[in-house]
Length: 306
Image (cartoon, rainbow, N blue to C red; front, top):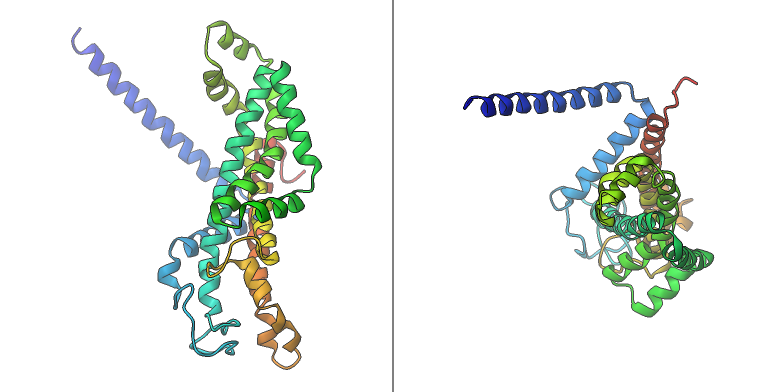
């Protein structure tokens, strides 16, 4: 009798190991079957993340380090030249990956916490709670988000915390709509009603019964929202109300070096310089969309060869 608990524990541990191994094997099989576009997107995202994490090691100069020669041409010393006050553009491109991607990622997470939480609450509570939250969201969505963001940033300032909170608040309206829509199909299921009858709390039902069943569309939406937030931050920085100097940001780098385009007929490299941060923005957006498209294809049950 004394050996029974130990025998059960050992079997349970072996079962958990097999389950984890099975999940890992399934993941490897799915990755092998992934299309070339998805692999391209994953490789590009991995490179961007690597550059963002190890920016201080990879960058030859400091983020705000100023050199004596403004608008220096491309050379072994300055790979992509310098900007209008003598900062190395290549180094600022590397640091821009950390700043732009990091702020966009934190903003997207906050948007999903706000919008996802309110969407789940509205779907499971319904009644007046749903009506009040939904009408408030309708009011926010009726105002163009970029104009609204410009107005709020002009009032509260263009600090990084203000930028994150304002964009997350405006973007959470889209997350709320999706979360509420997909949750409405789940809250009427029998297992959710059974959990309510057992006396489970609202937060428990949301975390254990509803959220696991709506994760695929939310994960796909996270990738798309990240792209939109990423582009919004770049647009605001281009307009001068986003990430402020001396912090490196790809949107502000396009604005600062835009005057070099007029010299393209005399020096092609100088004319290309403002397009480098724009190309970095476009490449990451395309890569994320490739991965999101593949994930949506897998979770929707559609086949690639249809």
